[in-house]
Structures are given as C-alpha cells and as structure tokens.
Image (cartoon, rainbow over all chains, first blue to last red; front, side, top):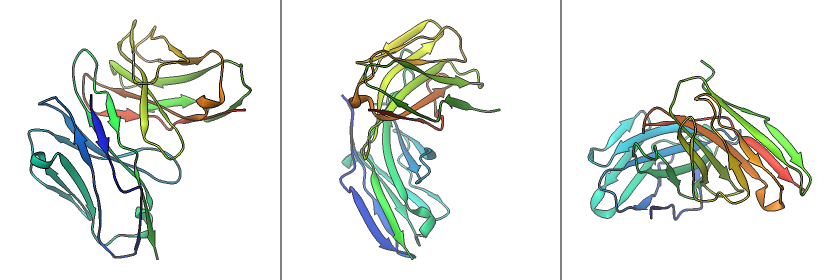
Length: 117
Length: 111
C-alpha cells in the first residue's frame, strides 16, 4: 500500500522567510510519480509539480524549488522569500500509473502554511 | 474548454436523503476519479473509472455508487446520506494514466 506523510501540520512564518515543507512517502512500485498541490482558502486544488521516480534532479520554478531524494523517500518543497499569497494548505501526493487503474493519487494530510506580513 | 465541471457547488442534505453529484469533463479523458476531502485532511479516492462502462472502488467506497455511461460524465450517487459523508467532493480526470485535472469541488453537509 502507498502512504504519504506530511509531518508538519501547521507552519507559520513571517513574510520573506524561506520555508520548507516536508514529504515522506512509501511505495512498493519502482515507477511512480510525486506531486505537490496548493489549496488556497478558496478551496480549489492548484497543481504545482509532477516528478517521475526516475528523475531525481531538483527543480526550481521561480520562488519554488523541490528536492527529491529517492534514498530517503522524500520530496520536500521549499518556498524562498515567502509572501502572504503563499498562505494555503499544501498537499504532497503519490501515484502509481497503470493503464488498468489510471493515476490514482494517495495524498498526505497537508501542511497549513501561514505567511504573516 | 471548461475542463472539469462539478454541480452543485454546495448542498445541504438531511440524514437519509439521496442525491447525485454531477461531474463532466470536455477533454475526452479516459480516466475519471472521485475523491472526498474531510475537514483538515487530505483527499481520499472513492471510485474511479478507466473508461465508459468500467468503474472500480477506491479507498473509501462505502455509501456511494457510480456509473459511467459516457466518456464525459461520471456521476456520484449517495443513496442514504449520513453525517459521516459531510465532506468536500472533488472529481478529476486524466488522459491515459497521466496528470489529473481537478474540478472545483462540491461542498456537501449532511445534517
């Protein structure tokens, strides 16, 4: 069975601080995908990144960066110079991707990030 | 393209009532999914479908039914609503086994 753990339930920072959200996963699959989603107070799910299990390169997109380490089964997300608009719940998710079952997602329980001015 | 649309946006049900949550996608995706998100929690898979006429259970299927008569539509049926089904329901779709596109969600309260 797959499992995603986000140990940080809530994080509060002051604007312009850097913040890292942790994600640890468990799977028996050799091929899988990892995701991060943002859920702002309005409630919709905003896709941030999708990473293939064979691609361990770190990724940077503007103020966002992701560190994927297969050896520790972790896929951490860092926001640099945080802004108030970054306040949201952030979910890490894992999917097996099979033609017989699609890309069923297993979500972590989320980290509530509050960025204070 | 509208993407994935869900209706209604909000609904309040009384215990024992039934209702259908509608989900439609216009991207010609084969795969469709229903998730529920309880307060303060992550999403959990209720049912999924790999194509018209084919559905299967996810992690939390009890109390729900689905059907998939067309590629575009994947309705979720609650037969006897219970307070434990108070949740936000998200529908999603994907092409083949790829990235999922989520609808805006339906907020359901059962009193």
